Length: 268
Image (cartoon, rainbow, N blue to C red):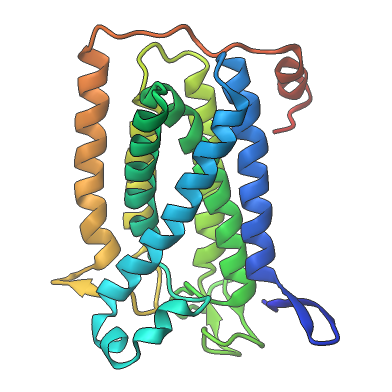
């Protein structure tokens, strides 16, 4: 709603950047805790998350430049701006970077893949809250009671009630993160958590795209993200099925006393 959270002289804390920072820190904390519960290295988890985050930002920016290639050709320096990202580019390059890092470090990729992806969902949830504060990724106009009008956005039309797609997406990502972590406690096949993320996120993203009204590129009657979602769902189901049929199994994630206390109190 209002992206400038705090201004001190010439220094301004922007809501979008603040939410991204909170999301990454929360993802690191949760990821490290879950990695240790599985007997994995917390330090390697930090390193892997940092590599995936950096390459994820690069991938999201690159895919945005591909989608908006006409504008990029006119102004190549726009790639250095703080806006303009396509999440799928970040996911794809982030996973590739993670796989490469695990091979270099001789780490079990599938196990770390299962730990990282719920954290990715958490970071995305906070990122969408940042989108809401900035007013980007906005929804269609509506007269319904859920409509929200922006007043200080540099992206969304101001003083027009719109579907809060950012909040819908944020809630969806937090639900997905919770579902993945619950599933991980009983999963027996490495990698299935990561592929389940791909399935759930892609289905959710495909649906939310119908509610959005900002320009995101298009391929035929579908938005660019919807087009990519179709392939991501197919890859997710294919990978999930393949790993379920594989002979590789793992012990379920350890549940610490702290986890039990959290479940009993309903906190997460």
